[in-house]
Each structure stands twice: as C-alpha cells, then as structure tokens.
Image (tube, rainbow, N blue to C red; front, top):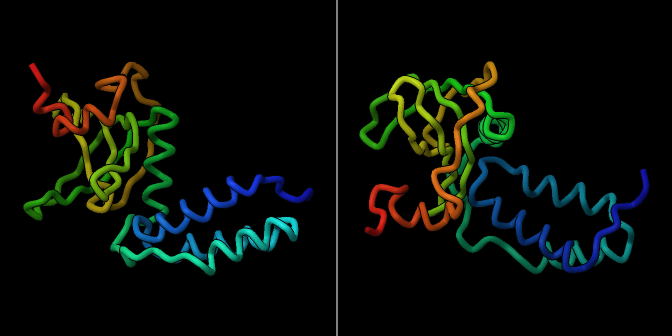
Length: 166
C-alpha cells in the first residue's frame, strides 16, 4: 500500500477531529485510529501526527457517547435511503419501537441525531442517537424524503423547525 499523502493541515484536521470524537463516540475508536494512522503515514507526517496527538487532549473528557456501531447503521440508512427500525427511549424514559426513513444524521447541541420521517406517525421526527437501541436497516425507503430546509443549521436553531420565524 502506498503511503498516505496528506498535507500538514490535513493531519492536524484528522487529529482535531479524532480528539473531538473522543467525546461523542463511546469506546476508544478515536485513540485506535490515531495509532493506526501513525503506523501508515510517511515519517515526516508521522512526526506531525504524533506531536499533535501527544500535545493535545479533549478537555471535555469522555462522554457517554454514541456506540460507533449504532452510528454506522444510522449513517448507512441515511446515506442509502433505507427504512430503519429501532427501539427508542425518550426523555421521559418511555421505550417505543420506531420505523422510520432516515434522512440525515446530524451532530448538534452536543449530541448525534437522526432526522427521519416516522412511518407510523406520518411526520418528520428527530431522534437522539444515544437513545436508539437495536437499530436495523431494512428495505429501501420511498426515495422522496427531503431535507426540511437547505440550511439544516438554521433549521436546528428554530428548535428543529418548531419555532420558525414568521
């Protein structure tokens, strides 16, 4: 395998991103990824990566985070427009079974969310991924689910579209 050809700023972006991921993903996947990157980079970039990794840490500490396997299932479902089934625990601790068409996974307000069309409620919903259990992607969705807004950051700022300016 040829060496990975990154620029210095790209290596810094990788280290910074992996440090942030330590907070939002459960487990030690970020630390393992840093170690593997260090092994395959050319010597000059390995030094850049190792120095950046040794000289940085996530001061927010470790969060409960999202299970990387759960995130992978939801990202795949959103990317491939698949129907997704899962158990969901809401903020009141009630657990329900959900069947949705995933539209997009979003990281906002310190959490991962999936924006989806809830097939049983026949409405758009946003689910926190740390409350999702046993996700399973199934058959292709309808293919006609669209983003609620071009600018999802602005849409999120309106409390997920509930408080849109008049």
